[in-house]
Length: 414
Image 1 (cartoon, one colour):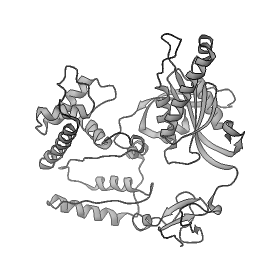
Image 2: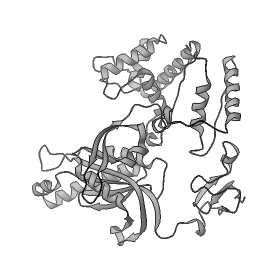
Image 3: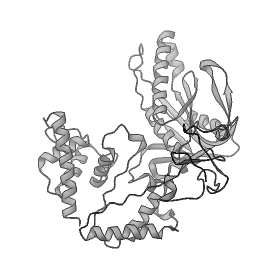
Image 4: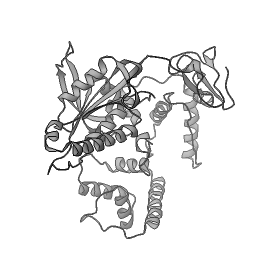
């Protein structure tokens, strides 16, 4: 095996980097992207700059899985008849900027602007394990664009979105200058366009493969088998209603009933169980699982929890999300909402009383109730009197309230 000074190696077949550090923790001897052995000639050296050498760079057209999103501005023809061309250009320009921001936030690629429509790719040029999920999240950001239209009193922009996932061939650049686009061949773009055409304003419609890849992460409404122009067989489709209330992305994609037995990790599980026994005896413990994405860290955690036969404990689970990096303390917010039992359609009053019931278990003072209600962005209304602390003091008091919650739970875990 050859590696550079940074301890990294590349698989020449898949064109990916395999961190050497990951191979001495939760290890794998095969490239996760193509299955090639990492102990033979499939390992190729990377340059000291970290850039892939020419032999690792994809050349020409390539076959890959892609999630394609079509979004369309509803009623644009009528809009054009009401607006001066310059005003219409300004409106469409702002709309395109909003779409580009939403797509860019989830690492999508804006492939083409077509008047009032936009075609975007997820999984190109950089692939992620959750490209389908990223596309759906971007779709919801786009349909939520409520921009008022100038010179059209009471008018608003409404958008509809179609998303499909499948194998395509991504070819060379087509066009030149600002009009270039990356050619994509396959039925996936056509399917996304057909689904978009069937959507109602504000809808995000997805195909079967996108639905399978997003799993239980969203709430869906099944639309049945649809007859689409250009498709010989009916196509299954779903309307995405919103994000589901689920503890973690792993559980959304891997329901307990579908998990296969964990094999080859007995040593790691036994180590964690020993640390757990030490913690039960009052010796504080921290176990850190390190490994590359997809190697089985979450699955190992689930297997450990399945081994716990003593129910006299409280599980506090905090999950980071690459899609909420701009949300301060997002894992803590989500843990509190799950613990309180918040539902998507709960009113502020219902959320407030659920939080109140949760804090009652730890005998929290009323001042903490106010701080944590504001922390969860529950509107005050007639429910409570907003805090008058300055921002820095409010931040400090909120942190102290969160720490007191953890301390109270540790003293009374059952």
